[in-house]
Image (cartoon, rainbow, N blue to C red; front, side, top):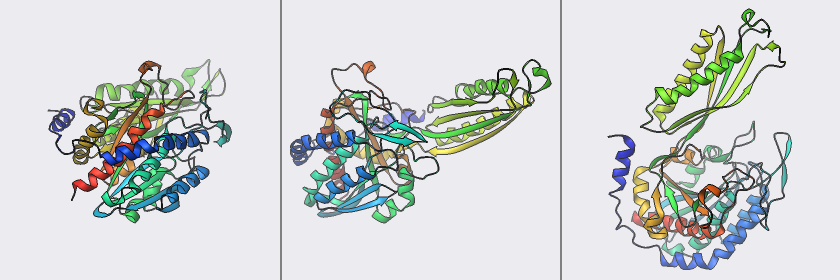
Length: 431
């Protein structure tokens, strides 16, 4: 029996009796602050900032948290904000995370709070937009903090609200994101034992929650292959070694690694070449060509094997053409892994809050998330929250990271309720 089937069968035995309804107080308080959450989202959407440059964003977040009487720390991983709420009963320390950075995308929507912000990205002036929904993540976690501070006596344990910068990746030459927060001691300093996170989805309907046990989002690694040949005149290719033709053969060879050399019934994998550079003139065969690409994997053993195969394929194909290939693979973001026991424990809360008919398991996706760094350190749970208008066909929903990206704000209320209920239910389940 393969691994995926084993996991799915395990989840058929979920303890549905654990929580048969969402917390009624959470329901009441969430409904009371829905408009406030939407207004906060609109503010952050209108004034986005790029990774490691979220200075005004973090100031506003800290201001809102201090209004709640929380202990607030700033400047973590450059612009990160962390607030701590100690519950009225003993219990675990639970981290709730939201990412806060925008993207170098010029917004093209016609919403009243459209972003008109400009910034510099890799030496170019660019528009800035929350084109991945991080503005909604900030607002929902602030709403969750407001609810839980009013329910302090009912909380078993401690809640740590983590507002993380640079999820989209730090600028070249800088550190950032979840990896830097951990490096600076986030988990150890605050004693975080488990971490929960959510991500809005523009193509999943409002009111829905989707998740996957185990590997949910892919590891993302980067490769650079330098193909070195021998420069010659384009009219006499036989007097040199053509790195362009060699690179073409390598690209084809890379595609057969996933399709022919790894077990795709285990997990999916992707190798994509995203950049080819080399040559200066039409009649000169150059000395060198560079290939740059991404590797997406959902299993550590497959990841290791694919790395080995990329190196072997590039080097041997180049050798067969009389060229030489140098391969550099940079480990990036690990697999976003939902701890099996934690997921099993929390899914009944999702059923209670969203309704069992609106919660489903999805196949793993080859997108990546730096929430995965927390999941590598401590048991973690990550899920997707629907943000597509119910009257919008799925094939007409604009994807993330695009100028027309759009989120239906009516979906934010469920996100607030879900985070609050997860925190309460998990803490109280361990008594």
